[in-house]
Image: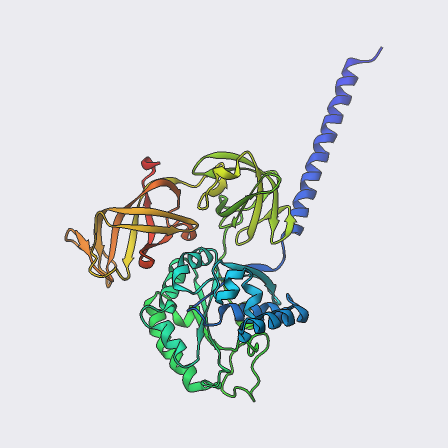
Length: 471
């Protein structure tokens, strides 16, 4: 007869063995995850600047120099560009892939491409420069860690981009607001016959840009670096410019400057936050975005806010590769089950269930008024379009709470009814639909925004308080 005690004991041993195996396999998985995480750091670079400054050409040249595009492709583009009588545009064709962009020679969507240097993996976000495409530029810059501001040194072109109505000024202000903390100011077209690597022209551009960059909130000594290049020929990009071409430049080339940029660390163990910038159907619902905090791995349970849809992570992709897990700063595509593609809008946020992102329809903010449209005054009832991470929503200023003295940064005593250009003001903002945002002090990337009216940026601001009862 079998001893029942022995049976129980054997079963217990079996269970223990299985638990041990599970634990070991979990540890192996963890070790595998660590291996999965790429060793090089990852940065998003956004190219900004006036239309025709040479952003796409410079981006194209970077991809060519870092071996992402072969000579034959370049020759094909050169011929295509020649056929369209646009000979100097062939490098831009690498970045501008759709027909509308090639015919017009303007970048409309935010182009995306990848390249690597010694220490860093980069994703280039080639943002459009043309006035009517600024909202596209906003979505590019809101994902960027480093900005490359491309300025044309050609006679007349720098002036057009810089003067009122030119895009250089607006792009710099937007980049700062959208959290692009480091800026490389690349003075392009230095090989142009009107410039010919002239130190005087380079210095003139640097001296005109510096006060403006300071005004936009950049610490020029710490966070901004100027350097001369030729995007079309590739001079001073991968290797330093030869002294025979430019005797006066002793600084780094573009690749060195990009590698040397330091950006703030994000928390891989923080609550998960990924603003969704796009979605599509592919064996489930796939969402795209940049991880701003926390990590995501296959098998995780998450929640899509603000519609509180509980989802399961089926797969995670970084660039084109399937990975087990991805951390902060990575651009990812996440395949989900439990939600339909049509139930997700850009601006929704994939977040952790234990600490989901707040969703509100009203919040408090500190605003800096940049430039109101002619004769407009900023008061309760003012309507504008709010851009915050991937969210674009109409909003209304419900109440001005206090004006802030720009010198002392302290609130002024008197009651404020309206303010004009240049003012700093704390106010309550209301939107029609629930939006997912954070206080700037908790998550800068999800708490800074711009207000635009009729295609112009009128104010920049940061979220200081959330009205959670409005959810």
